[in-house]
Amino acid sequence: MALCEAAGGGASLAWPRVLLFGDSITQFSFQQGGWGASLADKLVRKCDVLNRGFSGYNTRWAKIILPRLITKGNSLESPAAVTIFFGANDSALKDENPKQHVPLAEYAANLHTMVRQLSAAGVPASRVVLVSPPPLCEAAWEQACLLQGCKLNRLNSVVGEYAGACVQVAQDCGVDVLDLWTLMQKDTQDFSSYLSDGLHLSPKGNEFLFSHLWPLIEKRVSSLPLLLPYWRDIAEAQPERSLLGAGDHQPGPGCPGT
Image (cartoon, rainbow, N blue to C red; front, side):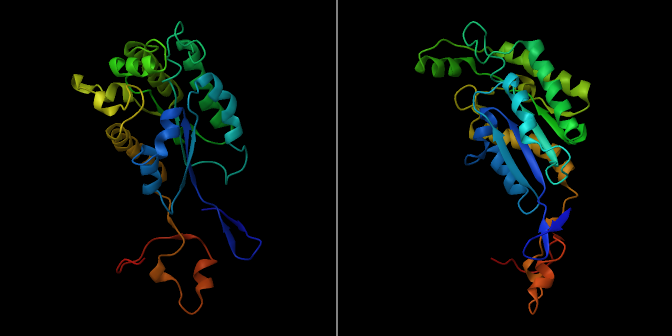
């Protein structure tokens, strides 16, 4: 872990980061029981999990803002892992929702662009995970649309085309991919319980996503140490020796403390 001098003496801790970049399904992921909150809990004292979810956004807008989220040439700013999770809005039907709709070919090109943007900022493909949009429960989403005074503006078959494009881009770019659209419909299972309103994730859907995403994140952060000493290992007489030195530490044995 990199260290730099702090103004007050000792070394400033460079806390590793995991960056979650996406639309509302990412923005809402820090809600109670959310998949992002579960990641943050798993990685406490190892990584900061940053939620950069933007409700309603598509890849056309995402590729514009991504360079602003990554600082080129600063190793302290280079995340240990990045998820790119778009497609639920890009796949909106053009006739019903032209503002959010992005044509399929452009969606794929935008994903390619974002992987290249990360690479240019020092984040290699080995740290990137693409996540496809989940399936759409049309009956439930149509009810949500009607409550907003509009017609059904998405179709699950169309979302599937965007999920397929996401998987193809991942293969082209040599990055890992989590194909939610396929996994949630595996063996023709009823996926409606994974969704709260037909589009966004329910508690069960958040748990499903986390359970499949965690192995992909874990292999990217497994070598990161616990930051700062286990409380039993802090020198009682001179705690500064323990707390102002190197920040890497592994927990020692013993009874749990507060």
